[in-house]
Image 1 (spheres, one colour):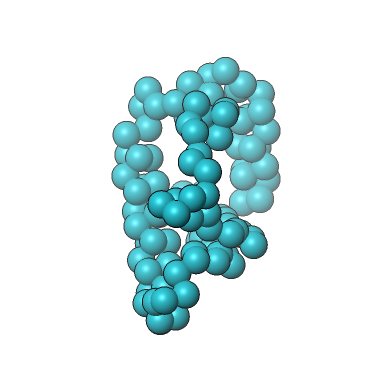
Image 2 (cartoon, rainbow, N blue to C red):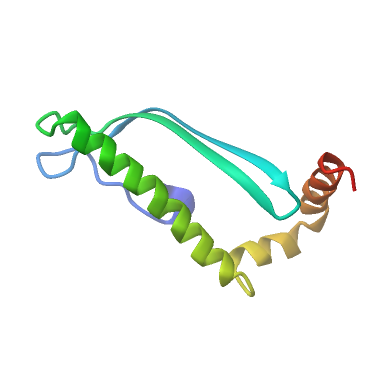
Length: 106
């Protein structure tokens, strides 16, 4: 994770590496200000000692918490790193905004 100035520890007796087979996020706009999101993943959490129903429940809770945290961050959008990136490359983001407008027939 050099890009984020973060060192990922090597796998040891203390640290276990999860195996992400795939992680898919489907984001589907349903209107100008709403969308539906669907997640699908296959992750070996290296926790074979836990029953599968606990792992599945934990994954479901994680997904809801993940999006809850995203929504909380969006409320604090003003002055965020995202806003700075939009300012740095307005043409690229304008492309996405146009595509959204085209999709909804504006």
